[in-house]
Image (tube, rainbow, N blue to C red; front, side, top):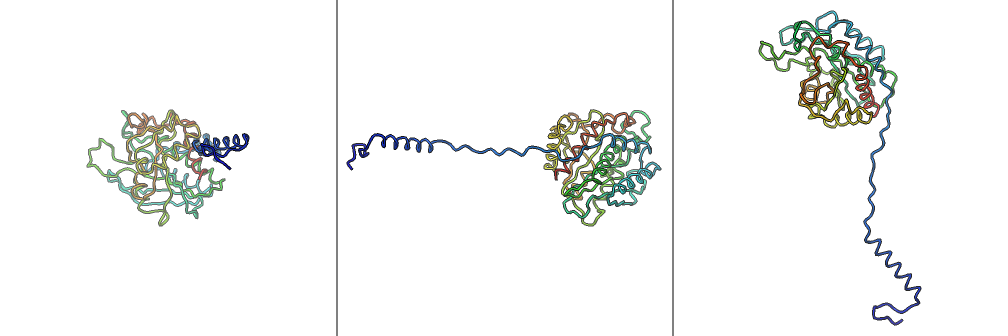
Length: 336
């Protein structure tokens, strides 16, 4: 077959047309950029049961009714018995740690750490903690500074959320173990204006003891969440600095869960400075990555106006705030 000057053999027109269309199509395909498939994250699906804010509110009332839970007081002893019995009634395995502890003012108290475990046989574990003692003085107040405070929010609210979570766990079948740690002697720290020589690590004495003397030999957890002052009206929970430094992934997990639940106005993306709270010693001594959900001003870094004052009563407790925090923590557990 003879070729023409373009190197194409003469052939019937329709065959040439078909070839030209084929060549054009091939060239066109080779110049197109393949469309990349963008993987969308899976849609968030709620798994946790509803957190009962009325129940949590009742647990705060119950604690405050004992009076200030100052170590060495009758109210302290009665509240310890109440917490222990409630946890056992929910079918959890309970361990109580007792030990003499010397405070910054050279007083000796017999601390009571209460630890309740859900499915203690599971290796994968989450630690939830809150302190149950209340401040022995009102060092941020302008009157009755030397009298103990009610501690409805500072102590009472965190305990209340954990007790309501304990009630939910008693009906659950999760694939993760959970430990509820009620720490003692968190709030018996040295005041800033004390005339005594500064005592290092005078706060969070119960957690320091626990971290050095585990309730179960060799205990560890995948991560921890501390609840401190989680029940006041208008509370805001920024990303606290100590937790963000030691456990940024846990902060992201909790805050993204809160966002998915519609709680972004409570759990803000503001960052604060570091705080000395129970989670500091969980991170540094127990070596468990732990964060702090704590009511703080993202601007000043200070706690609420009621902090360590006689305003820390039932009047400032808000069921909505208890609901937001409790539902967020429940969802984190149920998503595991």
